[in-house]
Amino acid sequence: MPFKIALCGIGLDAYWEQFEGLRDQLESYLSQVGELLTHTGAGLVPLGLVDTPARAREAGRQCRQSDADVLFLYVTTYALSSTVLPLVQRAGVPVVVLNLQPSAAIDYAKFNRLSDRTKMTGYWLAYCSACPVPEIANVLRRARIPFHQVTGVLGDEETLREIEEWVAAAKVRALLSENRLGLMGHYYSGMLDVATDITQICITFGTHIEMLEVDELSCLRASVSDEEAIARVEDIRDHFDVQPDCSESELIRAARTSLALDRFVAMYDLQSLAYYYKGSGNEANEDTMSSIILGTSLLTAQHIPVAGEYEVKNAIAMKIMDAFGAGGSFTEYYAIDFDDDIVLMGHDGPGHTAIAQGKPKVRPLEVYHGKVGRGLSVEMSVRYGPVTLLSVAEDRDHGFKLLVAQGECEEGPTLAIGNTNSRYRFRIGARRFVERWNEQGPAHHCAVGVGHLAGKIEKLTKLLGIGFNQVC
Image (cartoon, rainbow, N blue to C red; front, top):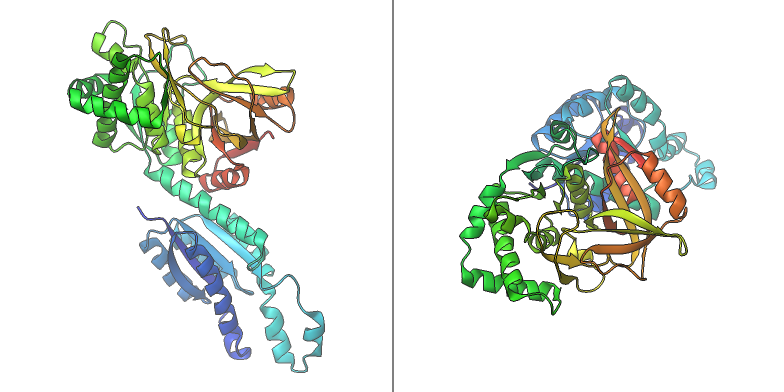
């Protein structure tokens, strides 16, 4: 579905006859905001300058009929709250109030030189964006309609960044509402932190969940031809640095499962997946599940994030990070290097190979760590530089909250054990980071993505109506 932004300016119709040229001036400012929003790649739904309750009702209906994902309400000058309320009520989408002046300050000297009092009033009315915002906020709060704000100067860098972050957050919210999450298998026995309420997942994020059977994936795998498997091995060699001790038979096993996963995902139109299944006692299923890592890593790199160990919440976290263009790789911290003040993080299973430092390696493992079977695994480090950790954590008040930490992925020694392994430095230090993160009660898995995204993620939580915590 195309992402759409509805934009309207608000003003007061009584001003137009009183102050010549004011409406044209305000509409030119509105046009500038429209151009900025269009440059974000969104489809724009222009609602014009809304200046009466009747026009507001019409614009609200137009917004709803357009299927817009978010409404940007540009306060161009003083406007009555009775104009805003019917618009927002009928629109029925998240609202971002733009309180933007045409420049950083009024030219006091120019204003005081004006001899025509009418022109003087018209001049300062173009700077009156801030005036009605308390009135609008009062009414929306009393109506229990959430709203968000950008306060600043039209066209300056900070304002542009804020608007772009709201647009990015609204895009991710819209994508989550279209997300089809497949759940295949069952929880890893004993991981109580991973268990979650999937109905609440659907309510909070708008996600659709498909319950899937490993048997069906195994059946698809059996239909893969030898020729297809050999061709997929070549794809694997192109994507990964396949180590010399990887046998051809293991590569063929992984290739068959990778092709079956592609068909499985297409069959159910999945945009994300969480899985875990022992497969013991069933040869076909054990063969499938012990050869799944390369295929799930390829899917993750193709914007279909896959979380192992049936980590439903982390599949959502990975989807959020990927939707922001940051990757989103499955990870957990497992040790601390106190000498270097570094947290060591990684995981077996799917890695987001598109954010790897260099070409990810494929290694054979004689035994999976705490799991049934043996086979090929992916070894990589997340790209060096700024990173963000994201956990979708349980929250008593809101169902879920997003927990965030920003840090740096650094070069240095890691464990060559066929896993994703990286070294992370946090401004508050390793000890304090681990304690603050643990205080929030997250599951032990999280998603790591490249870049610092806390501002965008916080805006997403506001649009979703859930909690936000940033530990560093």
